[in-house]
Image (cartoon, rainbow, N blue to C red; front, side):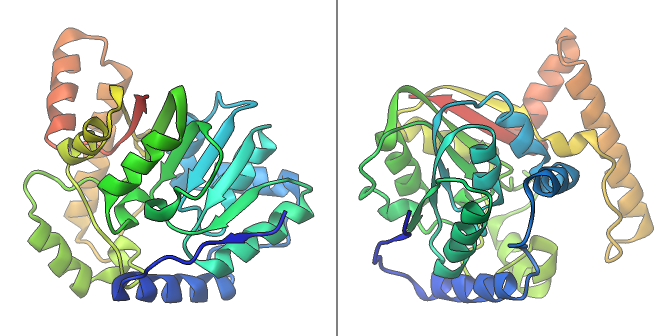
Length: 280
């Protein structure tokens, strides 16, 4: 199925981001076109970046799914291999072409739209599930993107916001953007639309669009030991490891009343990375 290209306005920030990301993909830094199904599934399950995605989508079978901001399309390929009818949205053309090649190689039929979440109203289909996997924070207008998702869902359908970055309560957005300039690699910065929101802001996006039954799930990253960051002092790496162990304990024991309320508080203070699920 050919890629559907939708002409949509792009700010300078978005143009820069798409340019940098295209270069990453072309150099093979992010995506590998020549991959077999078995190897692909082994690779995606090995990478910590996809832990929460695999956890949150583990029960999706035979659903019509809209996957938004897919990059080179690993999540879309995975969903299709799991037996879902997948439509992918990606604002950068070259990654769309990479996804198209991979889908053909694996004999998968994936609808691909080269557009953004803010301009996807041209898609005629409605969906059972809509997914933003670490992509909503790249949107120019996250509220417009979530509103569009609501309009594209079937009644009773669900939206998943997975692995979106959460700004801790003790940091300001000014601090974040200054850090972004000083240390872009720390945030996997592509040079353009890199944003961050607090827990309550993600909930607000969903509520304003009309979603209900909003729930959060702690990131599955806490089930692993954190990787060592060589740019951080040893003591900070140690504290990070201790923090991960504490959150892992909270998650495993959150049916205990006092831990349940402590987890509830930490999540709402933007102290725990989590995914969100809500229903139309």
